[in-house]
Length: 160
Image (cartoon, rainbow, N blue to C red; front, side, top):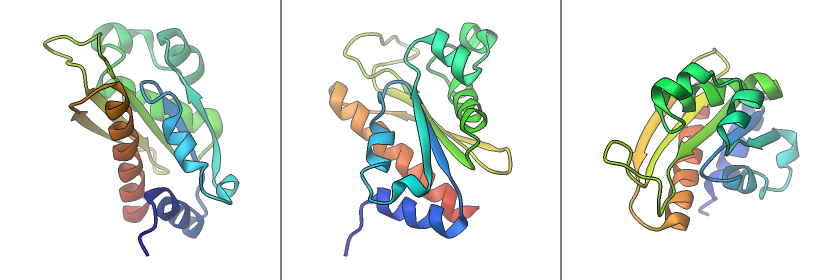
């Protein structure tokens, strides 16, 4: 039996007694959607924020204006602050964040279309951030980002 990653995450979270929340930008709620597709996920999914606009990242997730100015919305630093802010907002054990450029426009030489940062804030106060650059259209990039975020969540729950 090949269980979907969302179900495996659910088993791991239940086994640890952990809760999770999401802070999503370019994926637009896709990670939360996938997590909540699992029956019984209300036991461990607390909620999520789709923080597309920078002012929402700042107001709800406490991403610092200085971070956005210095590094931009699509950066390791912003992904980290989004994850930490979501964890604090929801009072969750872990939080997953994603910020990126899904395209087709909005890219640059330094930050091409397909660039995504995924963060996971852990119960010990740490944050793990991964950088990816995906190829493909907007939907492909969103799906690849959500899948990578779920993989990082699963890895985190298995390590901690």
